[in-house]
Length: 261
Image (cartoon, rainbow, N blue to C red):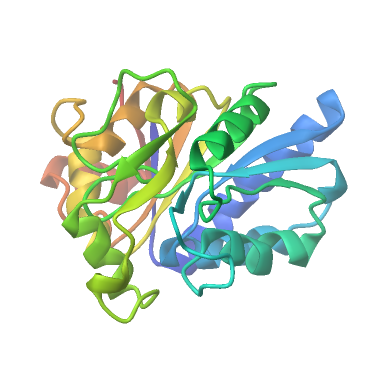
């Protein structure tokens, strides 16, 4: 894993968008199209804004998937990830093939089977992955299922995860946050050719420490990203603030550090 440190979240977002755009352009040139996996949430706003402004991407040749969606939430709800991605990505750049997860469908199991078949057709070229305050990737809260080979699974959202969603302003309070969601499984995320993980803000500092320091284990779901040979983790000073003094020093001196699994 390559860890890169930036002075603020805007510089972080622009650098991450540059890497993401280059990956999309490269895949399109080499194989005629690109397949991407997109995270949502407040931490991804600046990154997605920068990505949509990137030049030289033929978005009509991009297939897009998203990581997760609440169960039982209509696409019109302000917290719906379908709504988020339509407004902040698909409609802005003209992605024609976005495989949206319908968490409000009557048969959620059928939705999972269908999107799972679509994502398994070919590898994801580049995945954009956030990390939650409790260390989750997608909606895989601790303890995450590191064993399942199913592409998408139904998960229960723990209280820290639900508090984060309310705290970010997507819901009026925690009582409104759904308790279940559809999530891409960790092992499926790792099948992506390249991972760009965008994690700004001091509120993510504890999760970043769990991800980078200590054992790779289901109680620190984001730690599994260290098993991927082509992951770049983008941090700002706030999100890196709880890392060990040695690692912080190395990041300040070099701006980036390579960590082994």
